[in-house]
Image 1 (cartoon, one colour):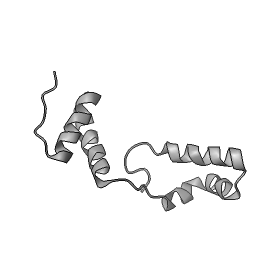
Image 2 (cartoon, rainbow, N blue to C red):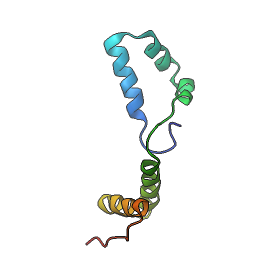
Image 3 (cartoon, helix red, strand yellow):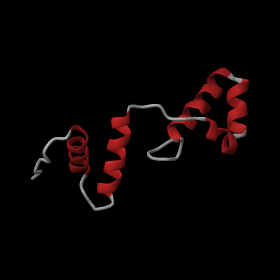
Image 4 (tube, rainbow, N blue to C red):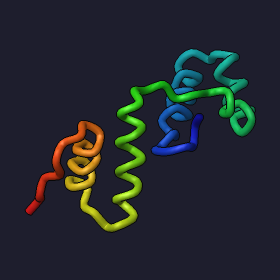
Length: 86
């Protein structure tokens, strides 16, 4: 679902651009009714990507740097031994 994790504003921006360039009636309807229509969208991506996002969110709350966040999340997902970042 939208708004579970990450930034979903990209979808809305793409629909706005689509409407701007095409005057699509469907896009206009979606924009006019976004609060209710967004519930009909789902994100489709690999399970590993979702897991990485969840792990990064967990570590981000602990003040870990972006570079370390990515490495820690990758290590957890692939089962690697954590690397020591200097």
